[in-house]
Length: 111
Image (tube, rainbow, N blue to C red; front, side, top):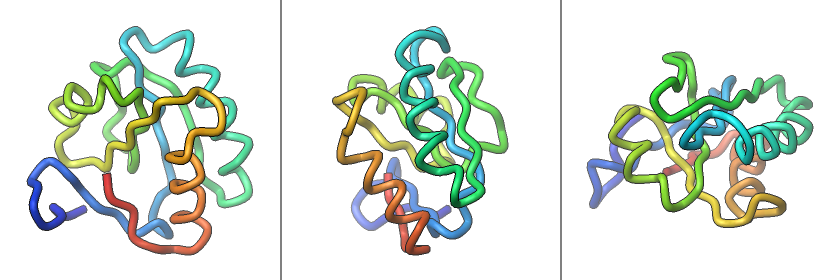
């Protein structure tokens, strides 16, 4: 993963290389479980595993971390070398579709 022009905080990854997505939240329970379940169903066909965790317990093998938009800065501090995607809606957020498209099409994903 490399920094994107203009921001050292934003990272990129080739969607074809994504194998593990972590849905992070404050406590590692609740809302992240719902989003993780939704993404797990969507990404299973691409052999991508999805799990949930608290921000402080994001596993080292996570390729992409998804979190509520309000938690993006904190999450990037916790895992500065990972792609971090923020979302606003727990169901049907455009960030989830962008993630799935990048994985499906093998294109660059920034976050």
